[in-house]
Length: 559
Image (tube, rainbow, N blue to C red; front, side, top):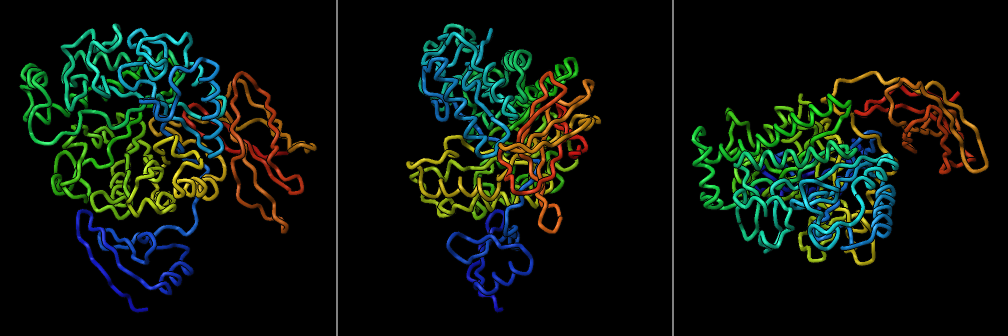
């Protein structure tokens, strides 16, 4: 068929669109099982670097992938209602876990320290105002300890999300903070920028305080990961100082650097490396495996500024007018990956395929190249909040399949090990949501995450041989298939995955799905009843063991 080329646009990553008639598209999809990504409600095919973007027609569900959700507590955006008593708080969090289980998610990224405060009992930080309504007011119990335990009961990971430098989010002054707030006690280590207060990243005492503050949580709570988002130095325009205080700090500590920007990047590097070393030492000495994960701004740097041969690395094919973490936030996230200072990176690629300033496909490919041959897992941050915005006028985000297409694209990238969604409230169906948001949630449930998935193994940990369960027996009952298995007391297993596959009429075994994750706790004999099974069908069950690094054993099949 003759192609009708309607438009060519060459900006940034050379995002192009061409129009094919419907016969050509149908012929292509029928023959290959793939489809072109098109602009919403058109036949215009989106291209990157002169190549059409192709994705599978059908979702490629995996049995192993990270499925996380950010839960924002700042301003109580996602959780919880201010000043809840213990019983009401627990009820709300249980409902949150119920909702995430209903979506077959396996990780919660919960904001435990929005601004030098705490959702946990701390010797270093005051209780959060977003917990009790007033910073420093004791709720009378420890929410974090309970939330971690409750999350683990569901077979899910709990990632503790910290904002390292942020002191205020509004017009508060130091005197408005709790008396035991570290910034109020140490005003010489703060500065104001953009009407908000933040810690001065160049001060060694700030780096020490943040490291100790986070290690307090690592050492006292059974969290699975320490998580930072994209709050490092604030984004700024121009080439000036953030404040007079920063200029003074540079005069004290910056003489050995070739530029002020290199000094700034080194300040953040030092914090990340310190945390890497501190968490690593804790893990080694306590037989733990707490991860360090970063979710940075989706663009590290632009190839126009960082071309081939640059000592810091090559940037993405994005226009220099777009912001970038290396140049505008002084966070060298690429370096942290290459040095294996972190366990996972989850760039916030909050743009559509046809966003010229930051095209989704180009950035996923760039990050895939960065993590290749490192010990760092790559997860992608998705902007489902944009479809929940009632004021959204962007045509791409009116497409209920925009993020679905992103997930299909990710499935073609071997390095992408999962996704994180921003944010929780935008993943819950309700009548007040824009129609497109509820449509996307339904697509996610019915096409992408139809069954549970195991978490990816942690690359940085030397793989150990976790043994299979010793035996597996199936007993049919009137209320479901009961499975009974045993494990060696000495096995390194901490949980088990139950797989179920249907046997077809011709005796062939169909796709195997994860139906449950069972925690080991202190037991050696386990019983699980699959109440979701159709008792008129014939199934084969298998159980695998998982260790603390999510390494998976060979399966034990029912006898």
